[in-house]
Image 1 (cartoon, one colour):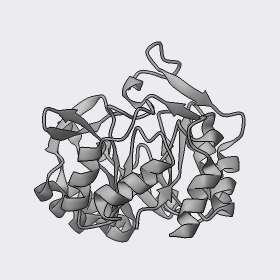
Image 2: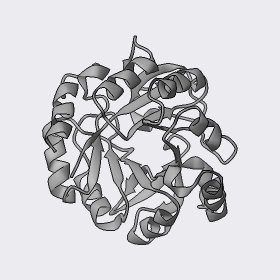
Image 3: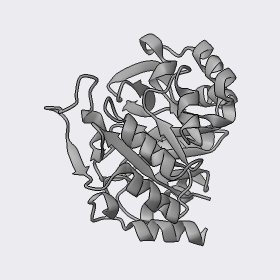
Image 4: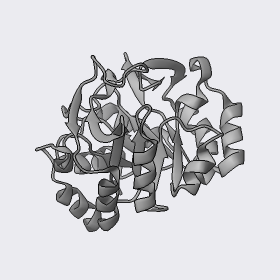
Length: 257
């Protein structure tokens, strides 16, 4: 069954909702950065909100420097209940698990020079175990294909979302997280074709993020995926300044499943 999963995106130490395609490697203040929401509450506040409502599988994403303290606060608030991503490597994965993360989310580290390095992935598995690993395959659409993007979704890799890719990588992780970077933060609707593809091709639990704008999108993803794909809301949620989706309704959906 499709479930609502939460997110806590941290940028420059604050919880924010950002139009995903506007992030860049050199961007901290960000002339090109488009921000939908900047929280007055701490990362720990949102972690407590997810904890109190049992929204499991919530991911904390560090979007660049200056996010360590806020991320650690979130993990401490719900030890063993949150996943963390953003700059994860073999050198720091165990550190974040010790800080309280249930799982670590890895992307760019696996793609040096934009090419998949299985040796790095195998080393990460040896360090923390596949059950502790989520591979983020966030992507951009190119024609009829989706290409995995790294470095805050600015650099296209040589890897595309395909049955072969997902079968291979599923041997080394317990979940996939897939942001549709082209629609992330826009609240204009999900990439329905990507959701269908993920449901057909992924042999392990998968969460889709990007463009969700209505509580009805949970039912839509459940129908499109046969309940195999979970859904994350960001900018549309009222807890992040949105007006399209109520957090309480998402929690209610989970309780009804």
